[in-house]
Length: 87
Image (cartoon, rainbow, N blue to C red; front, side, top):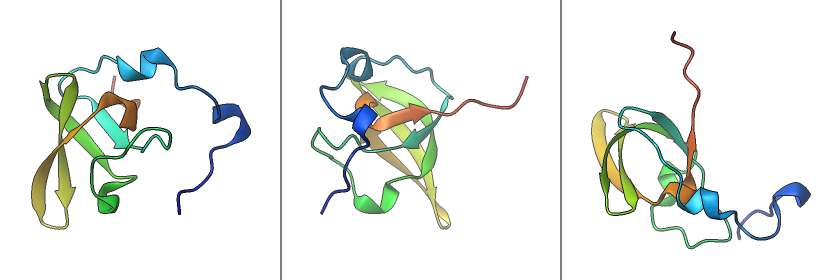
């Protein structure tokens, strides 16, 4: 069963979330949007990764699972950019 959204997050999803522009090399967290069909395994929910490219409107994300590096193709609505501390 899916968890519920908080009150402020309920309602329609903003269009800007669908067309979010991210750069290659950005760090992102994988956070599934509950109102849109999730198209990736549950084991990668909440994991952080790096963007290595773009395929159509989706992004190619490099993740590290235990000892292996894996790539997943994920729509931008399920990605949240992480602010880097480096300057």
